[in-house]
Length: 226
View 1 (cartoon, rainbow, N blue to C red):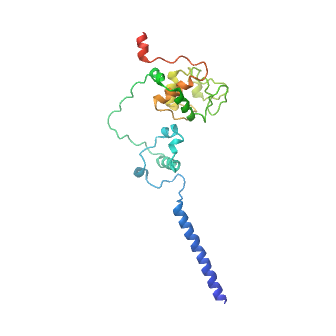
View 2: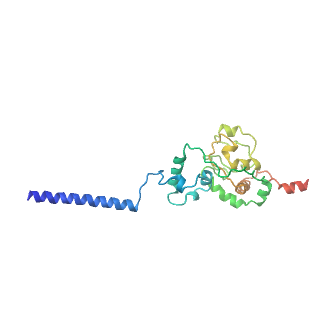
View 3: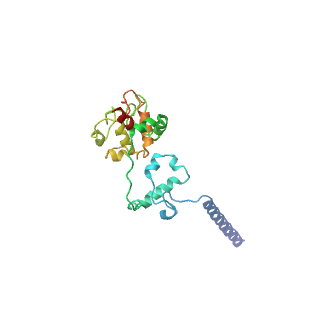
C-alpha cells in the first residue's frame, strides 16, 4: 500500500511539473520576452545604417509610434556606441545648400503652424505672459529680447557670453541647431532642420508680446526699394 501511494505521489508531482513547463512554454510563444535594449537581429541586416536622432527628437512622440520602436532605438544606440560614423554612400562632392532668404520665408510662414511647433518645446518652456521659467526660460516676448536676459533663469556661461539680442536672423540660426550655434548651451534640443518650420515658429514667437522688431523684408523687395 505504501509503495502504491509513493508511486501515485511521484506521478502527480511529475504531471504537475510537466503541466507548468508546458504552460510556461506556451506563454513564451504568445508573449516573447526580450531584455530591453537587446537586438534580436543585426543592425546591418534589418535596420538602416544610421538613425537620425535629430529627426526622432524633432517629431517626438510620433517618431516612436509603432510598438517596440523605443526598444529598437535603445538597442541600436547601444550597438553603435563607440563605433565610427558610417561613411556616406555618395562619393562625389557635396553640393552647398542654397541660400535662404529669411524675409521671404517669414512672409509665407504660417504663425498657426509655428504655434503647433511649440508643442516640441512646451516641456521645457512656457509661452504665457508672466509665466514661469521651466527647464528653459519663459519665451513670452523673446523676439528682440537680449540674449540670456530673462529674469530668474540660470543661464549657462556660454549663453551669458553669447551677447546680442534675439533678432530674427539669430533665432533662425539658433533654432537650426542650438548646440552648434552656442557651444556649451544647456539646451539639448536637436533643432528644426527645415527652414520653413523655423520661420513659422519665429513668426509665432513674434506675436507674443509687443517688443518684437519689424520683420525683415524679402531681399527682392528690399533691393527694389533702394
